[in-house]
Every structure is written in C-alpha cells, then in structure tokens.
Length: 283
Image (cartoon, rainbow, N blue to C red; front, side):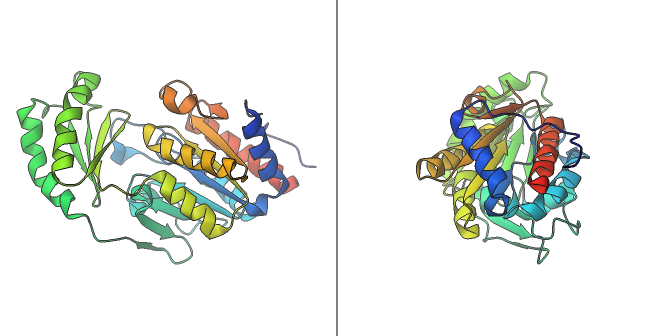
C-alpha cells in the first residue's frame, strides 16, 4: 500500500456509494466522464482564457490507464477543449476522448483528429441576425458573442449588470433560435444557441454503450450538465451503477440537489480524481 496524499470522499447518497464501489471494484469497466469549464477549468470572465487546472492532466493521466475510458464532455468545440485542456500527446491519455459541442463533435487522442457533422444552417442565419437583436434590446454593451462553429454563445458576464442582461436576452434569443430551428441552452451568464437533438445526456449514454462500460462517473457544474446527470440516473435505473459529482456547491442548485457528491470547484475535482487514481491503482 502506498501512502495516500488524497482521501477519497464518501458520496452522500446510497446510489452514489454503490456507484463509487462499482468503479473501485472493477475500474477497467468504468467510464469517467467530465465537463470542462467549471469542472476541470476554473470559470473566468473571458472563456478564451480558460485553461485546465494545473493538476487536471496529471490526475487524468494517472487515472486513465486504470479505467475503461476517460471522456471530456463539453459544449465547446472539441479542438478548443483539447487545446485549452492540454490533452494532446500526453503519456497516459493515449485513449482520451473529447466529446465537443455536447457530443456533436468528437476528438480521439488515438488518431488526434476531430470528426464533426456539417453545421446546422440555422446557426449561420442566427449569426447574421444576432447583432441586430442585441442592439434592439440595448444589450450590446458588455455582452459579447462567442463563435463556436456548430453554435453561438452570448455572454453577459462582462455587462454592468450581468444577471439583468441575461434575463433581458433570454426571451428574444429564444425567439431568434426558434425562428431558425435552434434551441437556447442557458448557463452561468451565458445563453447558447445551438441545434436540437444532441445534448450531453445523449452523448454520454451512447458513449457508455459504445465502450461497454459497467459503471460510470460524471462530473459537471452547470445546467448543460443536467442531461448527463439524467442519463446516469437512467443507466442506474437500468442496473448500471453510477456516481454523479457536482463541481461548485451552491452556484447551480438544480445540479447540486441531484449530485451524490459535492466538491467545491475544479481544484477539488482534481483532488478527487487524484484520490480515485490512487485508490484504483492500489486496488
């Protein structure tokens, strides 16, 4: 037995304890899936400055060889998450998969390439109208548009009153999205316009089946992670044990209330992953 530098926390629910026990008893049959922003990377005012926590890659590289698969499931384009995460060509992460755009895109470390569908035509149409909509609602100052290829996101974090700007834009952006066959995905001071039909739940469920996993862990921090939580709950009801981890304890109560384990942000997520890696390596 090696010396433990990290203590593995105990999930607060029976289902979570069962999920963790299943992962510990047969790690080679477990999928470990994680959101990126707010989970592996701190939330920052400018998302282009977001980077994985310094301990994230070492913890994942220690864990990945012991489990069936590690996947990063993010609303970002897959290539951006790979770049901001520092996930490419890392020893130990040879089989990492990044499911980007909520699973519409996929990057595999084995090939080092991204596979993606053609962009939804509604995204280009919404992009053309978006500046006018922001102007009309007086929300141009302090908000900014993030270009995601398969989607668009409007951030209000830099506005003088971020919550007021977010609330004011929710309906008009919903109407803009609906006109072009898109949906609006709200997050922490961000409203994303994207095609329907793919979410983190669909992506995670398909990935768990593809890998043939017999246990699953999912960690996330925001409303976009709710479908992934629901997918794990569905898998559990079908008899496949799972553990739900919420990064950040009180920012998103809808997520926190459904988690088996609450950890206070990315540094603590990384500590948990390191502890898990130690536990499965010794097991």
